[in-house]
Figure (cartoon, rainbow, N blue to C red):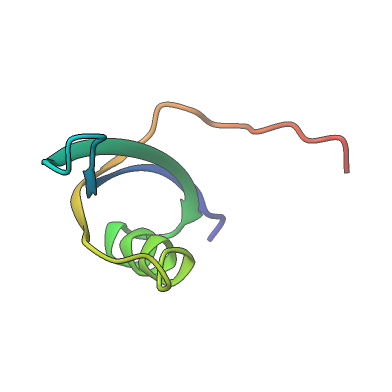
Length: 69
């Protein structure tokens, strides 16, 4: 079975200039065969980051990603 694309939302907590914590979101597009595997790939990618949590994963409507390679 070919991989599908999954949209994974990750929330980070960073400190702003005043030192107050601020929550920011980043979005990742992952090729995987399940939501669980997509979340695992993102967690592996961000393993050196601190204070992040995967808050959602959903199947993407994107079917093809074209790269120059």
